[in-house]
Length: 196
Image (cartoon, rainbow, N blue to C red; front, side, top):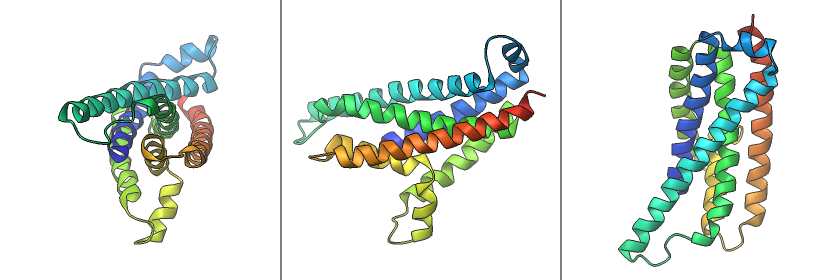
């Protein structure tokens, strides 16, 4: 379930944020916004928040559907319903971090078709690297650590199923916040060339 949630929101948030930012550039939204009350930072934050909200809603929908199926099937040790608020926090953090990465891709790509294609082409290796065990190929583990996918998997797994999830959840939340801030900062810098 952890991998399923992480895969779903990584794909969706990355493509959504990248495509949304690039589409606004094509429609000349940036010129109107920046002359008005919105800055480059405001545009990046809006895309990150959009990705976080959509990832949270979709992720909770998937978790609820899974839980209902488990309950109806009478499977022992089904969905830990009491952990859904903690899962929601992880979904929001993961969606924001992936959204910041997608916003960076959108800023670098420029046009919406290129941004969407780049997001799809990048999300597959990101997920693949997260699936490779660190013991099998350590380099893949190191690369995966600088991307949000594997941190989302660890957060979700601990939040849903660990007896005492707090240490893992805190560590992975810190990773997701740091990665999101770094990607958002680079996205803001990349916005400079979109606004000329």
